[in-house]
Amino acid sequence: MKSSAGTPPGLALRHPAFRRYLLARLFGMLGFQMQGVAVGWQVYEITHEPLHLGYVGLAQFLPSILLSLVAGEVADRFERRRLLMVCYGLLASCTFALAALTLAPSPSVRWIYAVLVMLGVVRAFAGPAAQALVPNLVPSEHFPNAVAWSSSVWHAAVVVGPALGGFAYAAAGSGSVYVVAALLQLVALAAIGALPLGRVIAARSEEGGALQRLVAGLAFVWRKKVILGAISLDMVAVLLGGAVALLPVYAKDILHIGPMGLGVLRSAPALGATVMSLLLAVHPIERRTGLVMFTGVFVFGLATIAFGLSRSFGVALATLVVLGAADMVSVFVRSNLVQLATPDGMRGRVSAVNLAFIGVSNELGEFESGVTAAWLGTEVAVIVGGVGSCVVVLAWMLLFPALRRVDRMDVESLREDERGAAAQ
Image (cartoon, rainbow, N blue to C red; front, side, top):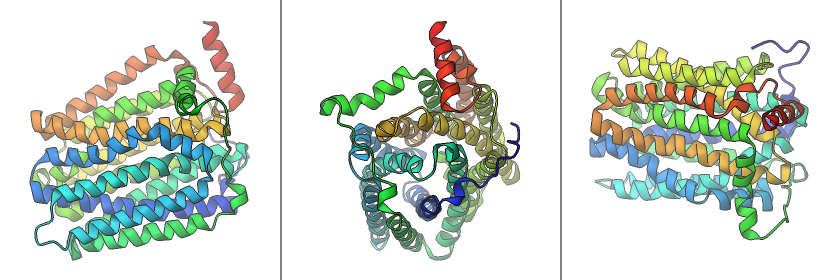
């Protein structure tokens, strides 16, 4: 990574609409992360089974993957700001429902899963609209800087949110966590509502029939091998190497650090990612972008192995920080490639495909981790997953040479890389 001489690191922050978007992203993610800590600890406390932690991810993954194409079309056909306002209102309602469930003498894990399914439905529609919104808030030349700041705010919330959630859970129980999380999501709704309507009107795509429009995002990604390689690399590597789903087991049975310790562990990857995203805002990746991305994912796998071998809180914390920093490199490159190479009228649908891949890696990865831990044991499952992530990097370097050759992250350079790959 090299410093971009003469390029101010706060270019995107000059735009008021983008600052309001960041505020919504901050409060929305704070609420979601607090909620995640409470759900994970509460479900494990009720069931005492790692497999049920996998079901937490599965309940949120299935709706998002099943509705991804429809959600992308909705993000391209309707005004994105209003769509996000509806989604934040529904997210807050679901979180209040989780709070209400804690009032029962014996909270039912089935009802918790039912609410998580509803959360998955709402997030399926919120994700493409939010991603497709950002290029409408800043000029295209400021977009990479906007990605870096957006990632910084997101990961800062992921650092603070779990720690707040763990502290609130230990102090006042899960109900208090859910209420605070819902209030934060309402603040995010208000921030989105403050965006100027004229700046965020979604492009309306009229080409083809309904089915053709639905699958247009998939077809576009399949044609763009650089994008396909980037999002599939991240999907498979994180799917195999996802250790975050098993953190409640580590906190309770291996490291014996309780719910507050769980919150700190969940914050650690985001701490590393926040530091890395701030570095990328000041010193963006300017050359050999593809190789930098592959290196980041490989380090992610190595850090996962080190976490699986750790037996002390300090070592576990350090490995998770490194893991998050390495993952942030991949996130930064992927986000820029997807948005810069996609026309505005397609961004909702392409973002939906991207988020479907991310959902496979995150929510389905949680399910995979729970199942593997039930079969092999928690520590072995994490180590095997990290080894798998490293192997995937080597395989993808061979399968996607166009991604390996990506040098600069701008539209013209990407077109040149594609022409070079086609010629070979």
